Image (tube, rainbow, N blue to C red; front, side):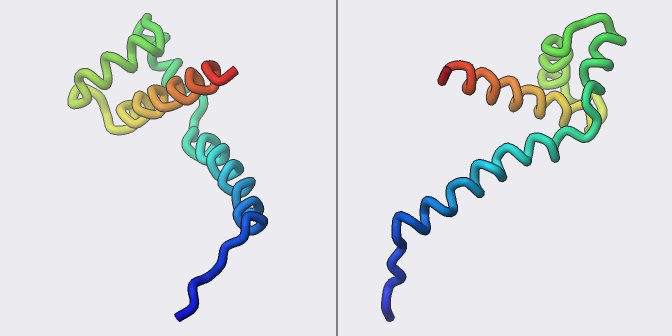
Length: 86
C-alpha cells in the first residue's frame, strides 16, 4: 500500500476553510442576540454577574439560560485571547 503524499500546497488550501468555519460557529451559536443581557438587566445585575450566578447554581435556572451562560463564558474567553494577541 502506498502512502499518500500531502503537499504543502494542499495543506495551505485547506487552512482558509478552517478559519472560516471557526468564525461561522459563533454566528450559529447566537440564536437570539441580547437575550442573556436582557435577563441580567431585568434582575438588576450585569451579564457577568448573571453568568457567575447561573454557573455556580445551574439547577436553579432553565437549560437555555445555562447554555447562554456557558456561551458567554466561551465568547468572553475568545475575545480576551484575541485582545492579548494584538
